[in-house]
Image (cartoon, rainbow over the protein chains, first blue to last red):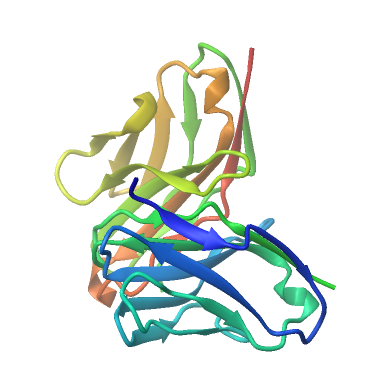
Length: 113
Length: 115
């Protein structure tokens, strides 16, 4: 089944403890992106990647890192999480940028205490 | 900068009645517009998109959207609502003139369809 898989789906952590949210797609998509969803703010883009080893900042990149060493994987790294990073995170991919439709993962709910 | 606005936080409609979820956009070039739906505890799912061509776009689950360039709007519609349509709906836009760098989402509109 074509899908975007995120892990973990739920995580409670403490301030400053590094964590990684993994994202993997099995559709050979070139484009991948991370969003965070917050009440009243909708979805905001954190980082995106147009292909392997090509990444760029979205609207809210502060406090996050990403890497794209393989086409299928696009992990989101929080080096030192803070409470304002408590959010619902979505990974998405599409064949290419432009007019292509995004396929979303099921989401990762992160709570930072 | 490109943006979309969804002026209603929530829309309430009775089952069987027509529904409209509003979206207006602002871009510097030609807009590529999308509607996505989010059911509880799920990721967003694609409903429909407008690239060029007919102003009325048909999508999944009986939804359609009308592109209006003069009013810079892209409202989502359905002739007869179902209880199962209750979900969170997001409008989104890509700006062709910025090289498709970003897909910008609205803040979402919660649709509640009552039996």
